[in-house]
Amino acid sequence: MKDSIELVWTAERESDTIRLAEMLAGWAEPGTVLALDGDLGAGKTRFSQAYARGIGVPGIVNSPTFTIIKEYRGAQLPLYHMDVYRLSEQEADELGLDDYFFGDGVTIVEWASLIEALLPPERLQMYITHLGGEARRITITGIGPRYAAWCRQLQGMGAK
Image: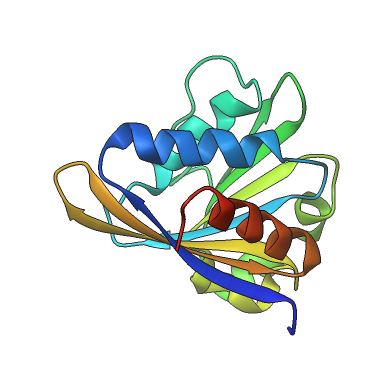
C-alpha cells in the first residue's frame, strides 16, 4: 500500500512501552486494528494490557492463548484481544474475524503474521524485540492513511 510508514520506538524501560500503548489507545476509534508480533516473552501481552487500560478496560487482561479471542468492555470502546498462535490460517478464517476487524471496537491480534492474509489492508503492525531486561525495540508500520498519520505523530514525539 502506498501510504505506509515504518518507524522504531525504543523503550528502555517497561514504562516506555506502557506510554506508547497508552498514546495509541488515545487515538483508538471503532475498527482500529493492531497486529502484534515478536518472539515469546517479547511483551505482546504486556503491551495489550497497557493498551486495554488506556481505553478504559477494567480488571485483568491476560493472554487469550487457549481461548483465542477475549472480548472486554472498555469505557470508550470494546476490545477484542486475539492470540492466533495455535491456529492455522484456515481455522482463523472460519472464526469470522472480519466481524471484529470492521466492528465497533478495537482489535489487537497477537502473532498476527500467522494470519497476515486475513488481516485488513489498513492496520498498525508492530514487531516487538526484547533487547534484554526491560528494554524493547518496537518496529511500527502504519499501513493506510489513518495509521500512517499515527506514525507521523509518533515521529514528532521522537520515534525514528
